[in-house]
Image 1: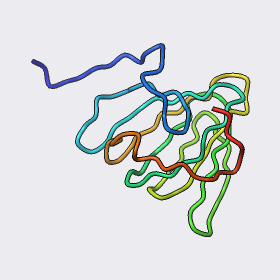
Image 2: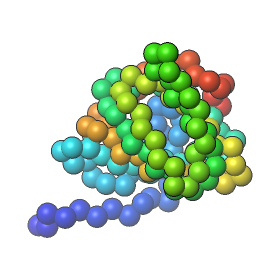
Image 3: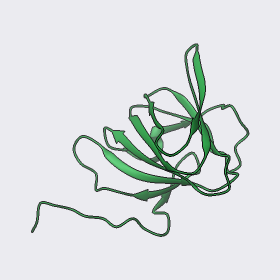
Image 4: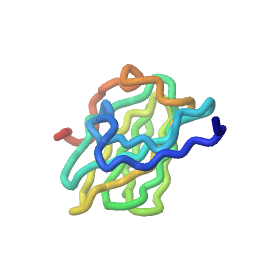
Length: 131
């Protein structure tokens, strides 16, 4: 048995996130975190959520969209284009949308590993969701 694990990105979603985006597993869950590939189709807007206990680091790898984040008195909306990185701390409300005509694709690392669907709490966002 080898200590290394390798995974090919699936052509179909492995899961649908609580916000409605498509999730494909990138890595096996490790002690410190987990990683997924997220896809949002053109014109789609996710359900706004906040996480109970996990922090996330995002890297947009293709497409064009926007990410809204809000915590306490602070809020901002940023453009998501290839090469854009963003952080989402536990307790931060967030929502994202695809404003382009190609899929919006984001690699998301979660710390600690994603514990399951109960981690995400639906909340009010910036836009009306359609997924």
